[in-house]
Image (tube, rainbow, N blue to C red; front, side, top):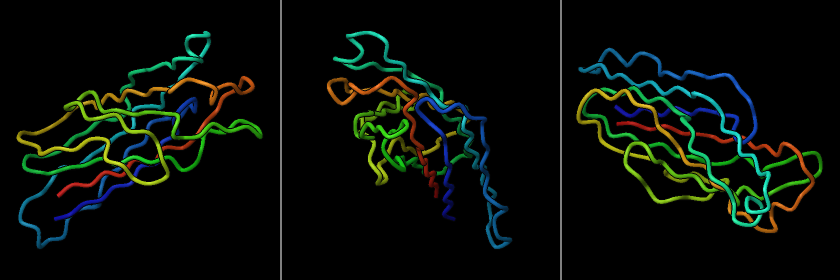
Length: 162
């Protein structure tokens, strides 16, 4: 059985309500029922307000996702940005934002692109119900020397399990 769930989450200064995505019921030919539920808990906000924040960057840990999975499932969460961060006619490259799973085993930091990258993955050895904290980090530097404003982008999470 192969499940694929795609979640669209407003992120990086977008306030949004949580969303729940669940697959439809498995075919009757499937022998074992699987529990797969991923919930978007909210959108992080990265606020740069100091000289150090602009030059060295900042980071925020945010409880972005809630996972509920049944025993024996191999799972993976990929992430990508739909576009650069935008405010009026100004933009900041999405690659200026790093993301790292810090809750279910630490993985290397990745920098946002418009192609899928694996944020987290694993094999469920017991019923899993866990929050997936994600560290969001700005790289700092001249990329962020833009007029003040709420620069936003949309993050697409793709959840796959087998």
